[in-house]
Amino acid sequence: MAISPLSKNILSLFLKKVCPACGSSLVDGALFCPWCELRIDQCSEIHWSSTGSPFRNPSGLQGTGMTGVPVYSAVMYRGLPGEIVVRLKFNGEKHLAKAAAGVFMQYSMKLPGPGDILVPVPAGRKRKRERGYNQAALITAKLASMSGCRSLDILVKDDSPSQVGLSPSQRRQNVAGIFHMRGRCRIPGGADIWLVDDVATTCSTIDSAAGVLLDSGASHVLGLTLAYRKRTTDSIIHR
Ligand SMILES: [Zn+2]
Image 1: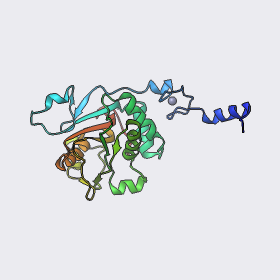
Image 2 (image 1 turned 30 degrees about the horizontal axis):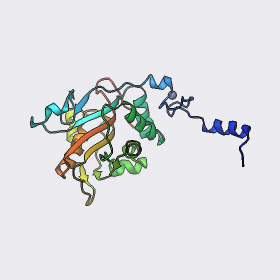
Image 3 (image 1 turned 30 degrees about the vertical axis):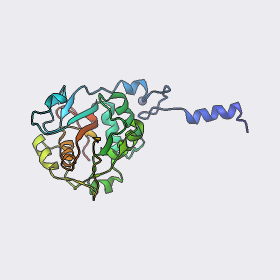
């Protein structure tokens, strides 16, 4: 049956694309509306997981005996990305996982490609039970479908106190030894493994989780977070 012009107009109203952050109308192909886009800053530094320090060229560290992995963050935490993280994490707005994955694709300096494996940084059992989901796993699933990668949920995490409010050295102690391989899961040989999380601050969480993957046979591990949060200037809601 042919659709009348009136029905088409009504249908287009329902199908109208809206900005996932603020609900205003969206230009075809855009991730956010122009106003929201203005509140996103790309992260132009790579951080080294064992120190949290920025590096311009991670390959320059090979052979220096330094442990750790490079951590790529798509954008800075301040502005819209921080709001997206808080709404996704604490307000149950799971639809924002798709927008977050889009931010990776649009802003990250380096992206996983086909053949690479994405591993979400897991949440502790208690936290996951309270929240009902792990936001890093939601983002990872969307990113896997956008980038053509496989996503493998092969890590588990012991319950630990929140990292919020801790000093860098306390953060490292807090996450030391809390990640483990899930059951009899194995790491596929030869693939680049990307550990995906929402926020990096000191990179200590990525460092601890990456250590488990490397100890379990991974040949190349990288960190990939949506946002990089500077400890001194950006705040995070603590609930
Ligand atoms: Zn908007």
